Image 1 (cartoon, rainbow, N blue to C red):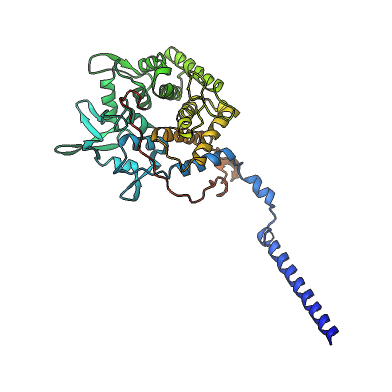
Image 2 (image 1 turned 60 degrees about the horizontal axis):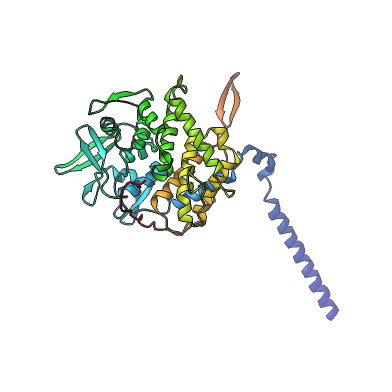
Length: 416
């Protein structure tokens, strides 16, 4: 009797094992092509564009950093505009706990400390000028220059709040105002940045004091500036020069002559200095272009490295963009923002670093593959569709991080 029970149990176990093996085999077979599709997995992968791991890391750093929401009822115009610099039209802030478009919110006649964000002037309009560090513009036309990165058309309208209500001010009116008030006394870095976006590189005009000005005069003035004594190591001035050079060369027939040769040489000189002073981990010098210096503290290191990266992303050509030293610099900034996502950081360093990463993504965006097809005997070209999963960022839910208020120096000369 015992022998019979043993044989029965053995047979039952054997049959269960066969069924499990059969089910496993069936599940494994489901991993193959559906309905006997002939195309292999290798062939499918061959149709997908290569995924650059650095681009994926950069997208993760941007995704994490854009969750450091600013509060429109708490943070200053200077801080919010720096967010616009990096994240452009996609930038969101929080109003009473709700996420809203920063750009659309700004347009509606806002005030800060009972002062209007935008003002109407005899020459057009402007963003409110400096009152104290990190409240309004730190430099003439700084906010207008920042908004050029959002590629706003000239008829974009902001509401300027006055005693009698609100009046519209367009980007065109801000450009008109900037042309009229340009001078040799104040720094004009951001004026060059802004006007080189909206005016042709051969533009000439007369300011309110009857002085002749031009884009080339602004370029010449910036080229002769002492970058080592300028705010943020001169990176903003070099960015403005690079931006103006890019706009100049974008017009067919324009080449580098006269002041543009000097500007080009100045830009390339500082690109080479940045590379020479770079550290082996990809960090750029905390001494900017003056000397080599490394900071162990993340907050101290991010500002010079991020500002330098932002300049380089506007300055280097496509070939240089692919070189190891540039990619290491990009990766260092991305790693810092990912690894220190819970650390407090001032808005200036954060958003200039983020701006550099956004520019890197824009410049390295894979070009669509064009395949030739024949329709009715005539060749035609069409973009080859990419896999939906080809460039999905590696994103996981993360807690929101509140950004702290910037520390305020005694004077505004060092404001970014």
